[in-house]
Length: 128
Image (cartoon, rainbow, N blue to C red; front, side):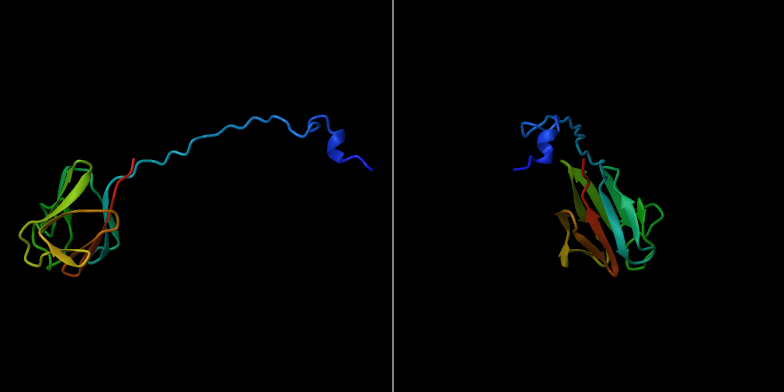
């Protein structure tokens, strides 16, 4: 019977050999909380949520300004508490709808849709 080619290789004889492998842990970069304007004036656009409280409306005094007559000057507030954001309707004329349900306040989760008239925003949770 002919010898296997591996039996002639001194590095492989015996069936095993030791090799050295460097493993670099995968570390994803932290991502901030954000709102993505997917429908309405100025879409598509992403707004980073870097503050403890963010006001959204059509006023130039709002932290996030969306130029739509369907929005109140100060339409809603987003407040970060205990690592999550809660949305609050600030007495807006057309209301705040979260995933199709009219709300006064609610905790936001990844992928939630906020609708303000014909303006639609998608909430994205931060990581890291």
